[in-house]
Image 1: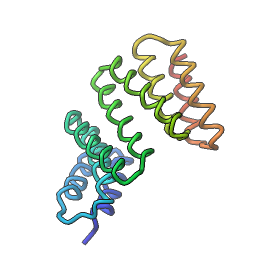
Image 2: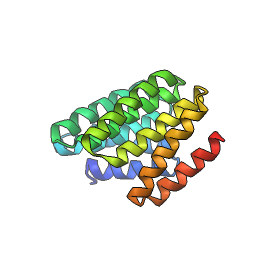
Image 3: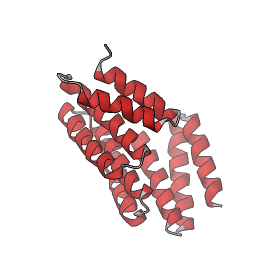
Length: 172
């Protein structure tokens, strides 16, 4: 029998394939398994939140991301807790609540800087830019995407660079 963490990884694979219903089914099983080691709570809740958001259950997704934040903080994994908070902001973006999403992502950016977490900074800049673009702040969106690109280049994150360059092109 698969552990909750293994099931969570299978669910995440389904997410990457765009198979959100399959991801939701598997992640629900992972969440429901009894006697799960506490250190598995964060990743299991996080993946379930992604699965829920991918299927349009945004309020439930925010609840599970909130549980993931608490579990990651409890285990001392502040960067993963920040990633989960960023996902909460993204659910608001997906519901066209761009001002709220922008505000929450700006908080994530400040926290990523405080933690010295450049990947979190790059993600926050990217998501800030997307909200700015949706709000019609095109100049600010371009600058935010450029900030994300610079960080991705420093990290040697080729896929992140590609994504940032594509996002810059989308704003133009």
